[in-house]
Length: 515
Image 1 (cartoon, rainbow, N blue to C red):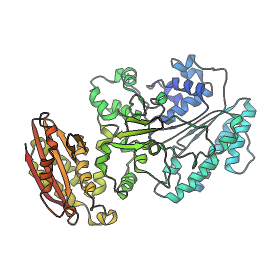
Image 2 (cartoon, rainbow, N blue to C red):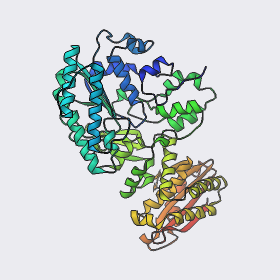
Image 3 (cartoon, helix red, strand yellow):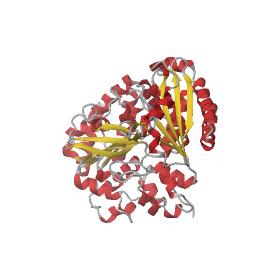
Image 4 (cartoon, helix red, strand yellow):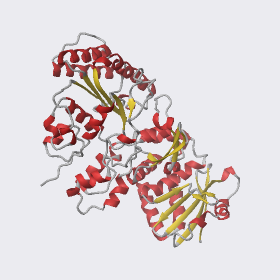
């Protein structure tokens, strides 16, 4: 029998009637409706948000037959059916406010056709309000409103802030209808990638409960390890579960870690390790934005953020860490309770897929010569294998020399140490090897350590114009004694001092020593 994986399918009905795999998330439907009325959920793209929205829709429409064998089948009032307004911005790209208004018109027109209702109002927000009221009156039941990818029209224009703000205000005007329509509403659920502050987009919806980081709903989207091994048991033959876990599991929303469904389903279908999720959307804007902010990419191994940074987002005051977290390039490692009112989030890459693919894309952004980048990655792997460190100097000199001069002129970041460290870090991370940045020792924090098989390579980076001297990187590394932590852990330990010149924009000093 051919196994059927619901890759990209957002229809709950199709999945249930066509025999696709389905992980039962219906307990969350019951939990949500029992405990509240207005909800917001943020998850990265392709994380199963649309399918969950459609599951809610079919439950409120009373499609009992679709839920046979699932939790909700015996835990729902199937006699009570509600009219559902389903709004989705997932398909297509909205480039102007005018296009957004036409999209509103199309969505409302489709609902009037489905429910055989005539709308008399002219303004799009008034039409929305009229639709809610007339549905409640016609069916003698309160209305359910489900909004999927509420923020996509804004994110589609993130590189054009003026347009994005215009669209944000139009969306705010549209969603504000929900406040006054409260007497006619049974349940409201909105999903998106980003969480915009309530002041800017959800004005008046102060009763909207954000369940994005609520531990109870941490696995509402995505697959846990136990769900994967139970539901997909017959698809896991000859699969190295530890390798799959390392590559695709790891998204943490203050509950059990989960897999991105898009990733793991494509892996199970193809049985080939690849960056499936990452390949569906390149982070060019994000990398460009981070470079403008002089962001040190080595810090992606471990970042700290306050609650207000992780949970708030707005187009006219973008924060790099917020953007990385909400778009899925970072996830929560653990939370530190500093006080009853303040939590510190420790963030990291969710898994090896995101780490390797992000850094390969970062290297692509630095140079037009993608072939050279690939050749250098292969060379670095062979160098780590053989410990031929003299060849490593040549590889980095070759790569820095390949970065166009015009690129530096536009970015003007060759003057700070973090840029050079970021490039070196990106090469090793693109290989998927164990890279440790700012690793704590008893005498301080080292710049970078690379662990490969039974060898440990410890790096110290310096921009020589900052102290007007050469040859100090290796000397400082030895003086600090960072290596002592690793001597009894690995068969071979190497100390490597790398010095850069902001004027020559390249490696000018490279000394190493085997301990």
